[in-house]
Amino acid sequence: MADFASEQAADIVGIPMLRIMGQRMPAGRDAWIAFLGMGLLNNALPFGLIVWGQQHVAGGLASILNATTPLFTVLVAHLLTPDEKLTPFKLAGVVVGFVGAVSMIGPDALLGPGVAITAQLACLAAALTYAFAAIFGRRFRRMGIAPMATATGQVCASTLLLLPLVLVVDRPWELAAPGAVTWGAAVGVGLLSTALAYVLYFRILAAAGATNLALVTFLIPVSAILLGWLVLGEMLWPRHFGGMALIGAGLACIDRRLPRLLLGSRRREGSTHATD
Image (cartoon, helix red, strand yellow):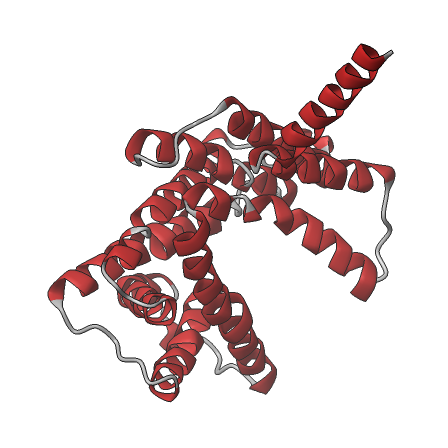
């Protein structure tokens, strides 16, 4: 219900913003079929799987399972795209980043309560669905649809897909009317975590590709832990710093910055020895 409310808030904001920016929603059948496909893969399916899975799996374990998204994306992109093939550096970087995410969240999460196999598989299926969504979303650039229109179309489509489920499962007419604080939270999540997030999502997808887009999953525990420290006064432990370092090393490995640095230092050492 909360995800559905945030999507409605994003709809309310997204459509007027398009008019302000002088853009229009595509009216063609192909565009709306693509929006429905993206809404299903990037919203309706993973949201449903994660919401159900987290009823039976601890939050830390669910976060670790969600961090497999880049692993799945690298493999799916290798199989389904001509220009995002798997390389040793990419695979090594994703694995190192995943280890960093696990170490930040804490390996104890793997042994915590709520380890139902079916629920774990649901969370993994959500991560796989996100991987397919990143590949599917590449088509909007080829179709000439701007990121703002793509984000709005996807959220509108996913709202239509989720509406029957919300009516059957939540029965909103039987719930107490939400107060101002609840509506304020829904609008805030809709504006920042949904509308703005999806505009950035499709901009990065168009500019950097599906594999690089999925790497943002590794930064979720980093931002959550840093915000907890800054806003909530939570403690930072050595494993948090170690995990951040591993995630940074993994990202640097994927964009070949770390391999270039290591190779450059080796060449400098070789030239120094040759001079001696």
